Amino acid sequence: MARSPAPPAPNGAAVRAQAARVLHAVRAEGRSLTDALAASARPADARDEALLSELSFGALRLLPRLEALTEQLLQRPLKPKDRILGSLLMIGLYQLIALRIPDHAAVSTTVAATRLLQRPRAAGLINASLRRFQRERPGLLARVERDEAARWLMPDWLLRRLRAAWPEDWEAIVTASQGRAPMFLRVNPLRTSPGEYAARLRAAEIAVETLADQPQALRLAQPVAAQALPGFSAGLVSVQDAGAQWAAPLLSPQPGERVLDACAAPGGKSAHLLEQAQGRLALTALDASAERLEAVRAQLTRLGLRARVMVGDATRPDPAWADAPYQRILLDAPCSATGVIRRHPDIKRLRREADIGPLAATQARMLDALWPLLQPGGCLLYLTCSLLPEENEAQIAGFLARQRDAVESPLPATLGQARAHGRQLLPTDAGADGFYFARLLKQ
Image (cartoon, rainbow, N blue to C red):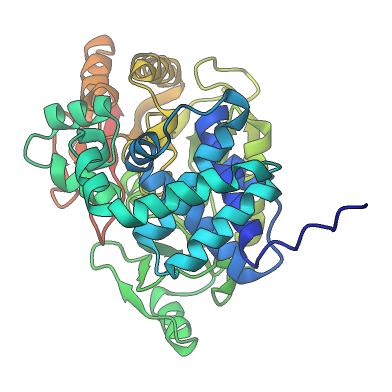
């Protein structure tokens, strides 16, 4: 006798399965969240797409706690081929802990997702684990939060380094890094004004605030999709964190100057440099990744801006782009990205303490390689989205010791906190992400 076909999965099971695949790609395969989401099929329903994003980002924000809970709930470790079930269980736990989805719906759709992951026999395991969490929630949470990583939602090594670097600020840094990042916009002054654009937003019933010390920047009360912003496709505005928006005015390019953006992708700072100089710069936008440079080209095209976009390694100048001295150089150096964890929560999983030394060595090679390309009297702005001194003030101290014709230029006292060299923006709940800046002049 033929078996009856299995009943269809309840609504919502597919997005839970998809979220489990995304989380598994980060946890087990070491892929970035951005890449994992891009490789995932886009849900047809806008609400499912929003839920996929919420489940993926949210589970990674709570990952140390969810992993500790999963270890408590499973009586024995999963086999390697079944590790995706651990990710699915975490998706279920995240719903029960952080979302307003009714518990019965969260549990039933998560259990049904086992079939979509080709693990139907695991339905009982997932159901029993989630039901146990519902029954024993206070005790289980109290038990796992005895572990500092689970309590603070940060890996142990990063907690240790943040405490050492920021003894008075580390708790605020960690708390802000677990939150949802505000959405900031950068108005294109070549096509509109901040006041005019803010009026357009309010007319579209999008609440917005201006920033007193950043005239091109606006902060939205609630995030919206970029394509839903009035005039976005016409180049009136870009999405860019307020911290990143300090780079162009600090470098202050003047019309007609030769400028190098040495690590340009995805292009926000290149575009801002051009906007600052009325579009009249001889700007070279350089990046080691040809694929990522496509995003730079797309941004410039949308904003009506032009630049020389080139593939190149900033540690090894090539005559193709190092063909004449530059008057200004922007080095947004590759770094640990510990200042932007709230936007990229996968950093907590993917970054390792062993990465910091090699990253600092690459930063030093870039600084030393680019410095000869700067003409006397020129300016180089070094920045990272790191909170760690090895990549920031210690990096600049070493550079100044090596390059006797380099002097540090003071930065505005309103910009974050002063360090031994440069200034540091720390992430805050309603403010910018974490960025470090140092401005160097060539004698």
